[in-house]
Length: 518
Ligand SMILES: CC(=O)SCCNC(=O)CCNC(=O)[C@H](O)C(C)(C)COP(=O)(O)OP(=O)(O)OC[C@H]1O[C@@H](n2cnc3c(N)ncnc32)[C@H](O)[C@@H]1OP(=O)(O)O
Ligand SMILES: CC(C)C(=O)C(=O)O
Ligand SMILES: [Mg+2]
Image 1: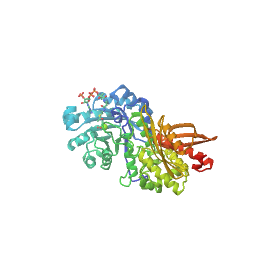
Image 2 (image 1 turned 60 degrees about the vertical axis):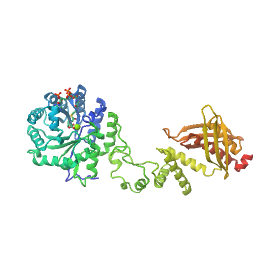
Image 3 (image 1 turned 90 degrees about the horizontal axis):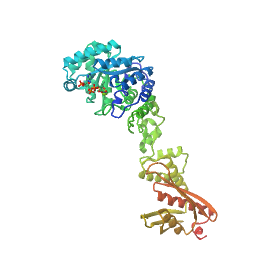
Image 4 (image 1 turned 30 degrees about the horizontal axis):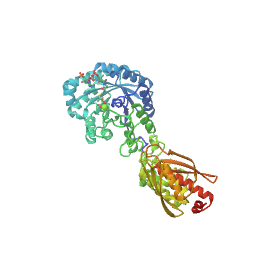
């Protein structure tokens, strides 16, 4: 991570979550939500907040006004088409900000000119002069955008840019409106503009990339390398169609790879995770698990080799710290790909110190469970280890069990037990599956303990949760309890019953056969 900003150019971060982000189908935010988003953006040091498109509706106008009044540090921008009424309305909204900006745009590509705007190139040039001039009469800070710039012939685009600069625009944004460009091409476009357009040195060039081909961030960084010093982006990459360039990715790319890209932003990255959560809740757009920087898995490791490396040194598999983006800690997720190093570490965290054999047995059972269950929670491991530790001295052990249940019919349990090392099989029919299991065990062991309690609950949520079965038995005035956790409720019930039964035998200090006889 690079913290030294000397000899580095500043890149201004223009956040458009509240405008382009809100254009995502279904992402409409209430005024309160917009204010909450604006607050976190301002706190984290975003330079410009595009708060909305004031002409779009009364609600949008009021939201831009409210954000403008609330924001303390950032510039607040309002979007306007190249239409006088739009520009007036945007000016009316952003004048409430300590620093306001009118952002006006017009199409420049042949396809837009022919089909959307129905204007000639010369007419567009005239429109730019008039509308940028109108905006400059309202406010000093004017940004002009060439909609669909990346599908515009360079000579015409340069004419447009030169016209906008002459009319008074301070920021020239060249959007990749349809996410069509590629990094090398984007780099060249900005480089050419900076080198060839008269007056280019007096303005800030800006990139605004969409993610239709999944290259929004790469294209934005290429634009910066080519001379752009403002990047337009959104939290979580929210935005029209496939979204905009993700703010958190741009900020962290520049911060993490300062060695290769000599730039910095003013964004305090430790706010990124919180901002992501706020925007996700406000827009109702869940963040995909594997989303860079802010996804649930961005700092989570499940595979044994990675977990082992992480335990030795976090830099083996993490190029930035979770703390740097506001996430408390890395998570080592326990699952079928985990190895002994992570399992041992997890046991230590849960307060277990097992001997070599017990550890090995617990690890085998853990792997077996992980093969059958998608999510392994701490409670699963606790249940598994408690069961393992308890069962090592058991004298009655479950070897195999088959339960056949029929609606309205009998329930049969075919059971094989090992009793003091001797294997015996029995079959029993009961009123229900559990009745058949318990009766089969009693028949095999040859004793009649009284069942005081039988209960089952889920250790963790979901249909693949482990069932935690509890059994309390009484025999000759002695009461003992047994528990077992298993993904299968019937197996958990059988094990819990045997767990209690083994304790009965242990308490009596007799051999299993003796207990059976006595
Ligand atoms: C790439 C982008 O993100 S652009 C921003 C997209 N955002 C939005 O559209 C915000 C929400 N939009 C709206 O609420 C509405 O579309 C409004 C209020 C802006 C306009 O509504 P309407 O007047 O009903 O127009 P409508 O949406 O049907 O069509 C858009 C019109 O704007 C014109 N237009 C589009 N962009 C521009 C521009 N940059 N400058 C001037 N005119 C433009 C279109 O040519 C079309 O004009 P026409 O009706 O003469 O053919
Ligand atoms: C309005 C402009 C800046 C835009 O969002 C785009 O071209 O994608
Ligand atoms: Mg856009």
